[in-house]
Amino acid sequence: MATGEQRQQERRRQRARQQELLPAEILGKHPLQNRWALWFFKNDKSKMWQANLRLVTKFSTVEDFWALYSHIQLASKLTAGCDYSLFKVRHPILRIPPAPSIMGVLDGIEPMWEDSQNKRGGRWLITLAKQQRHTELDRFWLDTLLCLIGEMFDEYSDEVCGAVINIRTKGDKIAIWTREAENQEGVTHIGRVYKEHLGLSQKVAIGYQAHADTATKSSSLAKTKFVV
Image (cartoon, rainbow, N blue to C red; front, side, top):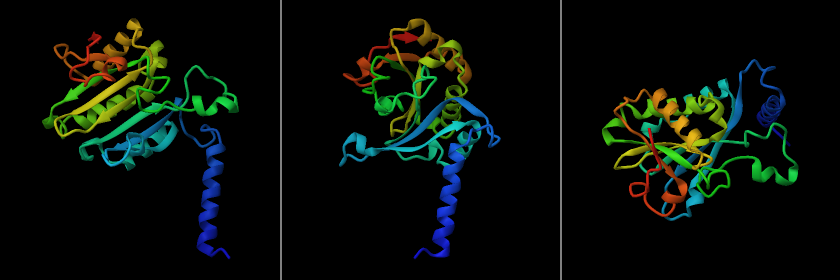
């Protein structure tokens, strides 16, 4: 027999499920153009790579983004070998729900270059020195997230798949992943807008690498396809 506390917990779960079904406008929230998923990776060499990757949550409103951001650890507080990734949940051209038979394929973009939405694309890469972790890393990462959820790349926002931050002993990396590496006009526009929103000096150059190159070489050896 359920206790009073168990019944209260079940009622809270039911209310939460009901709220998920309500349009964001009814709840007084501001919907985003796309739904997004936050992923967390913690390297454990005893496990397969995908076993170290966890989906944290999905969100689709401004308020839910800030609630999430305020409750997770800052990137600068993560241990070496950890990543955060933010990727679109559904392909932006799908304005109506897909058929159930293909829902699993189209429901979200996973933070790996092998994903069908990523494999022809690449990334704009920002590399930070160790001493920047406690001065600029968190600001750069937050600005990156805001660029994504705010659709700051004009008509090329649909080209953006997501973003990744890698916390590493030798230095940290932040990257915006795009869908099609051969779309030079779209890729370079995204790079210029991204650089501007980060407040980087014109003297600072950032490079774009195709996933096809980084998949076979380390990022330090991979060919830089575009520079802004």
